[in-house]
Length: 395
Image 1 (cartoon, rainbow, N blue to C red):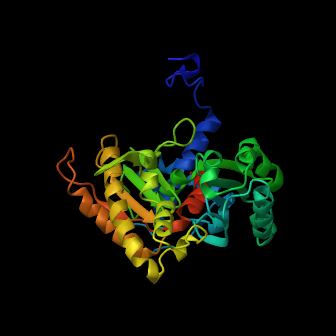
Image 2: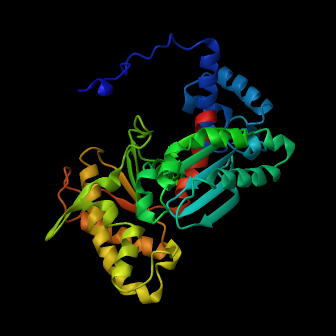
Image 3: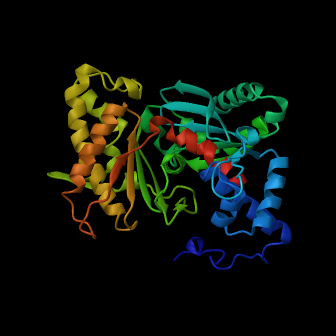
């Protein structure tokens, strides 16, 4: 092991002395908000039971949260056994955040409230992400979004989350970007630049991790502890939830499942990105004589492309099944969530084919994992980018 590989701190050496009284109070507040956020309309008694806190503690915390504008009380529910109950709800205006996805071929920016409702959305397609104009573009959209909020609401807009691929600069040549863009991206400190221009706290996320989190939140309860998530976008974005935690890794780019090697009969192994991606579909269409490199994802399903798209789906299903099989050697009994930036119909066909392919592969339990379609499609990364900062600040 080289010196650069040696950890600077043991994982069990936190370097902290323990929580102060204020720290305990803040942790309890987050516990209460989490119960309310994921169990809308719960009563004081139910919050105490679900959080494990004393009823008196919950009452005191609720008073503070209500005074702080984070929760509201609904009308008293009568006609049930016991004392009338007052439902506790998150205040939709209790917090706001902005999510940004810098994709290979598109930019999405949204404004989100505490109920995870998208209040504003900006979308733009481009042939490649331009490092020279990206900060100006995002800053202008953020300013436009902030202008739609009241003074009180704007005071509750604190965070901006940015989701983007982990190796954007290294792969700019695959997009046909002009020489120099890779170096411009390497030199750009996007986090500092956006903080300076927006005045918000900026957090960077891998696009697959952000999308995985958004799909986790979108699932109906009870949400599983283990999830493998795949988004067939320009390349394959991916994320993993293991034992209830999002696996981001030390650099934030864990779960790079699209780089898993795939075997195909009569061919050398290659990464899943090269088979199960919009980039691969465009290459297949180009090989069939179609001009597809400049087309946005939604234009890749024209009727004249049907044969090539069907062939791509078959190859992609086989590749993604191998990816999932390999990932399940690490993540036990996961729910597999798959989505694409293509139409819901194409996504559904791909998911069905992947599930069929999975039944042909051996599994440790003798049973293939459940495979379902995602709910958010191309919007998952930008929604996750907005949700994660809100969650970490308040929940």
